[in-house]
Length: 178
Image 1 (tube, helix red, strand yellow):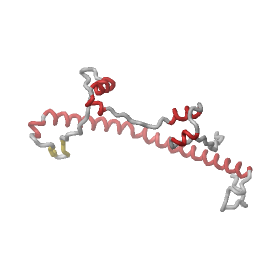
Image 2 (cartoon, helix red, strand yellow; image 1 turned 90 degrees about the horizontal axis):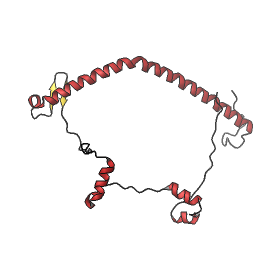
Image 3 (cartoon, rainbow, N blue to C red; image 1 turned 30 degrees about the vertical axis):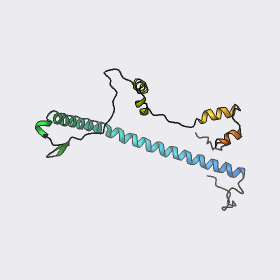
Image 4 (cartoon, helix red, strand yellow; image 1 turned 60 degrees about the vertical axis):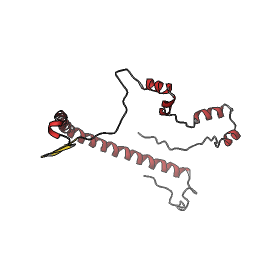
């Protein structure tokens, strides 16, 4: 594998780079990239094999567990007054069942065919409920850049707004991989 010119100044390695050094760096980067792909593919194949090996058993156990949990919680919900009284939980030999009040949440009334649009329209109808509609302001950079490109905004006008338009050039390495 090619290596860098040994006469390179390590304190400032870019100072004496030549085209041949860049060719060598790109060749080395390509070789490393190929190694990464090969090792990654090998790892992915092994992970897939392990996942496939254990998936049927895990799926079967997960299904059985979900069924048991559903049977227990359904029974407890149906028999809550008799089995729990006012208690929020009950201890059994191998675990406990707990009733917990969740957080308050809003649901749309489906019986009347409510949609988010209909709810927003209803909120707009009354002054006291308009505050429940979120309005977020954000900078429309795309529109500003389009106005700048169309010469409807100048550099000075952008500066007065606390902005400036720039166009940067970047350099990237694209390796020719097999």
